[in-house]
Length: 261
Image: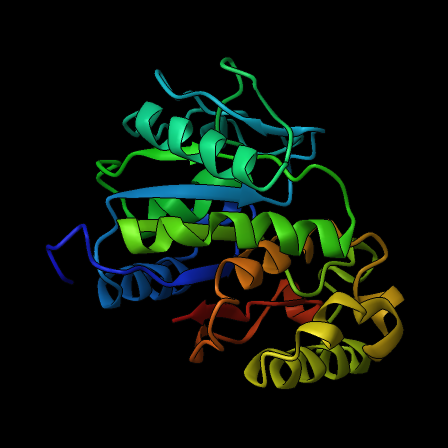
């Protein structure tokens, strides 16, 4: 890993699992290896599937607590800590960039990192020594999310990792059924192709263009952070890679994660 925190950063999208990912040694190892292969970020701007708030809202800058936004899990998962440094300077920079593009924003200083944010970070930056700021998704509008990402693009030149966290397939009705469903394979293959070609029109219009979209994503908040990451990488057609692939919960969830350089 580079020690130069001013190095240009990719924009990424990670499948974030659930709190039980913290007990999945193989997946934790894949996330850790991914982080080591990237330049070390000066700070991280996190956009998680689990926070929608309009207008675009900046979370806690210091201290940064955690939001245990899940139910019915073993007690140990409610004791997870991730004491990342606050990022007030990044918050000020994000406010300025959004204002330049005419995107309204506000602050919610008490809002900590939800599990879509901190679970992958525990694996990727376990020492919790990189400042983290979470930004909400204003609403589920593909063009608006992509435009939000475009407004954040300058951060990449400043050593900031723009990090979208969600899932490319997310249908809890199929969780833990044996075998990978055909609809999941079809949607994952479509996403791999569209992202590889960086076909922005297709990615924005996924509900009409992707096979089995309504089954893969009965609601699509978990896909939405991909569009923010894509927007942050859109000034020049990026190099695309998939650092993590495979299936989770017996195959209903693709682990496909995306790096846009």
